[in-house]
Amino acid sequence: MGRQPTPFAPVVLMPQEYWVFNFTRGPSDWECPYDYQIGRYDEVRPGMYTTPLFGGERDLHVGIDIGAPAGTEIHSFFEGRIHSFGINEEDGSYGPTIIVEYQLSWPPTPRNDHPVRPIWVLYGHLSTDSLDGLEPGMPVSKGQVFARMGEKSENGGWEPHVHFQISLIEPTKPDLPGVVRRSDREQALHDFPDPRLILGPLY
Image 1 (cartoon, rainbow, N blue to C red):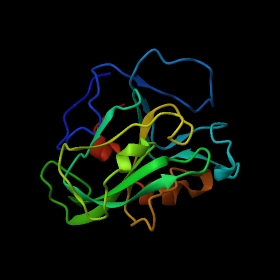
Image 2 (image 1 turned 180 degrees about the horizontal axis):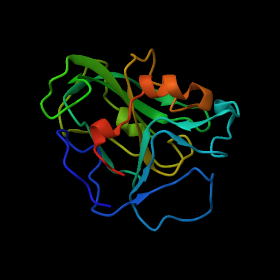
Image 3 (image 1 turned 60 degrees about the vertical axis):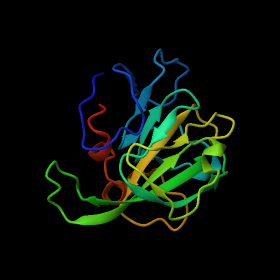
């Protein structure tokens, strides 16, 4: 699938062709033939979140997943600062996680004609060494490689990918609910806007 330019640096350097998953039918043993993949925003994923973390009732995904080989570089799409970081150790959670705070004209437009405000972006399922040397408040520059995708053994138990999620509410710790109850959809989509506002039309 082709890509179109956005005013931001790419978070992952994607090839011209990649796979867009449809998880609305639940898990499958089918193997994706592409090295790079996208998991969609605002998607109900029945039967995928079975660990106690999700309480048996959370299956609406409110980020975008970018899948690629473990070790793939993750870039900051804009200038920002490290807000928080840590390891979410629960089975099925994010594993190593970084949240970056950005100051953006929001929602972003080509003319940047909206007021500037802070937003927070969670990058989850990282490699453990992505957290080495980080400090809260540390600056990150546009296009900077600041993390890498983690192996399944360290990233919460998932195939290698980065979970990219925008929040309009400041997190109190390096964590956000990336999967919510269907009954909470309206509020969740308000609090956690569509990442394609930043990532561009990936699908």
